[in-house]
Length: 142
Image (cartoon, rainbow, N blue to C red):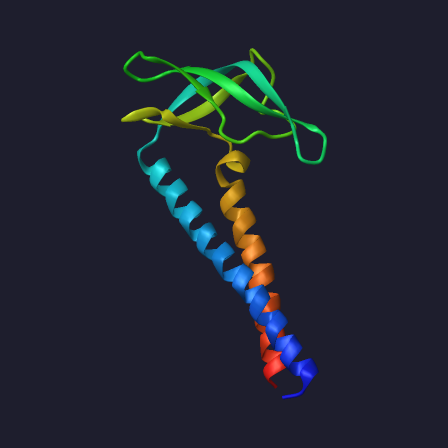
């Protein structure tokens, strides 16, 4: 194996070393979301506030603060864990929500993009990095 092949194989292994953990994170997030959805209750929430913060790129991102009522009548004030731009909506907007009946503070905005973005993102990145890594590693070993 010459130096170029060894370098190619090493770069491939590095890409695999990034891609495989991303795939594992994707599987974990997918399973966690599926388990949440199996038992989650539906409700409608109302955005009562937006918490603004500066993103690392200098823009502004927002966390929605949402009030919703559980099936047993409890009022819950929930804040998104991740901020986004654009915001989930404006104060006064209604949102479909899902929550864990045993722990209503474990809630999510019930929109497909917000429910599935992270699992799909990590899956895509894992496939890209893992695929490139596998190809480079094989080419480097030939």
